[in-house]
Amino acid sequence: MIKETPRNIEELKKKANNKNSWRERLSAVNVLKEYDCKQSKDILARLAINDPVFKVKETAFRAAQALGVTSHGKPIYLGKGKKGNLVKGINKKT
Image (cartoon, rainbow, N blue to C red; front, side):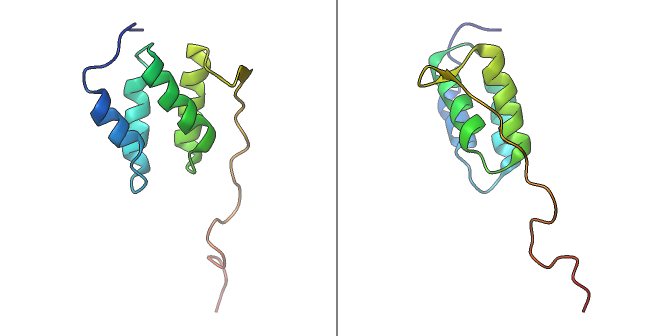
């Protein structure tokens, strides 16, 4: 683990905030988890708590947990992933 801020932190912030591509957010998480700095911890905590895609949320949670990140002094928790069909009527036969 590297104890400094990544040189491309601004680019990683943009990737982590990209609402159109969960793959970009996931790649940002995979880079940020290697750095032990305040900015990367903040981004990982935000994604671990608020990301709508469970795979990104889980990866960010595991990375944040390894870095000892807390939210308002309390440990963060990983909620359950949504199950079943996320698109209403996807299996409906016409």
